[in-house]
Length: 307
Image 1 (spheres, rainbow, N blue to C red):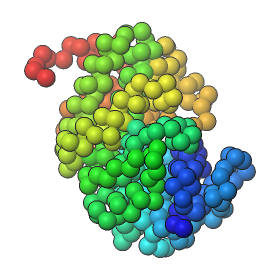
Image 2 (image 1 turned 180 degrees about the vertical axis):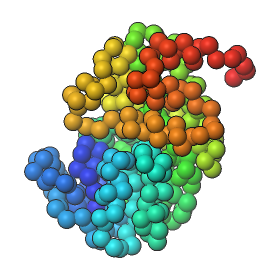
Image 3 (image 1 turned 90 degrees about the vertical axis):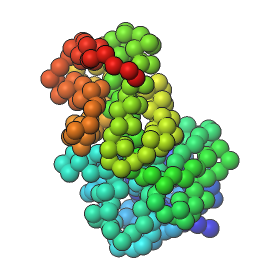
């Protein structure tokens, strides 16, 4: 039986642990506070207190802004590391695999990303995801570990494009939520999602990714889910802002991390020189430098041009 370790027992880490058990793996789930782990886990999942030393793969399902802290504490080993976080590190502006490359340069690494709500994965509902890594053999091994009849795992050899998709879609989802919360209509949301996809694509290509990756599960797929799904934390935060609620109040009422809040300024900083008006508008809205009405006016007043 394959052994798989999941680091992080939040909703996403728990869902991945359940999926790995469903795929036939013996799963070790690391939790910062084991007492808060779900009590109804499958028998194939063991909750552990110490970070794992050995496994066929280690999934890092912690928020992006905590990835460095957790990855630095991993014991030495050669088990492949799979980042399941989406975003850009605020201080360094690094993508997830860049953080791992700095801390564990000799270890194989991949990113798991795609249009996946944790509660649906945990329930075994049909879904598709992406394992992105340059190494084809690594992609294949990881897909075999996690894939089942209801969880289809696709490989992708463009980890840069896949990571940019996972980071940018959370920022764009805040904008989509704000549009709906303010009552600006479905036409406005559709236009914003489409132009947001163009921004995502420009950044991915500028950083060395490929346009076709942006049109796949880790780009368009994840963007559609996060900008339209009622369970999206980034969309719901944007909707609250659109209704006139204060950011501090929205965050204070939440226990789960809304990744787009920290990602927006870091993503825009990493995108220096790339045209990203929607993401810049979200950054300024979150920082209190502009209002939603001002942002929308600015976007609609941009010079006319061909699509």
